[in-house]
Length: 131
Image (cartoon, rainbow, N blue to C red; front, side, top):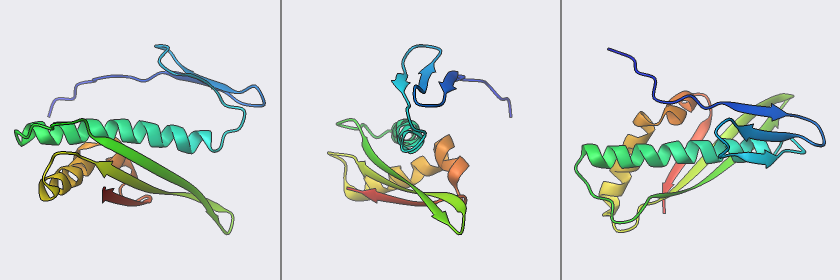
């Protein structure tokens, strides 16, 4: 297997009341006066973007044309139990114009493709729902 680097995301974060985050390419430049819920929101955005790409890739592998763009609503929960912090996630996926069985197959396949899904597999509870 030959590894090929596709992209490197570079960001700079500063904390405190005047905290901020920005990407080196300028696509992200936001204020972060508190680390939470910003961290969970940013994680949800990043995972959803990757997951949409994985759905599109799974569709292309199966020669399925998506009539409309996939949509994902992510909910990332930050929880604490006996002083130990952990995450829980819900991904609500919309694939309009696709047969429900085919859509379900695509969202399941996406978990095996998306690096965020792979990274979280077995580490956090994830519920994926086709809406």
